[in-house]
Length: 138
Image (cartoon, rainbow, N blue to C red; front, side, top):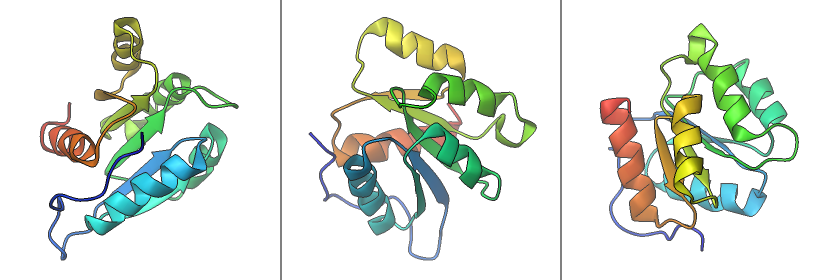
């Protein structure tokens, strides 16, 4: 199940925060990007860890949402790389994955993610997770 559209937006129209969504499932990225764009975010998409790293050379997002299972480099390795950089040491990161076991959630948090969001999730779950990490940083 992909996130559903609906419910109220997170941001006011005059605020534009940047989010990078990283997932090798392009249709998933498109749906998430549409929801977040409708909520007033400036959304960038990457379909692999290597593409994300290229984008991040020129982009400083306020939030990164990424999948664990990707073909070139897994998401947890990417999280560790990002956390080792001063530029992204405190950038909020949400790991979203179809993996759902407690050890998967623990591994995501231990790698440096602020929050783990199991797929499938609703648009409301996505919005709540974003509010949580953007307000608390964890």
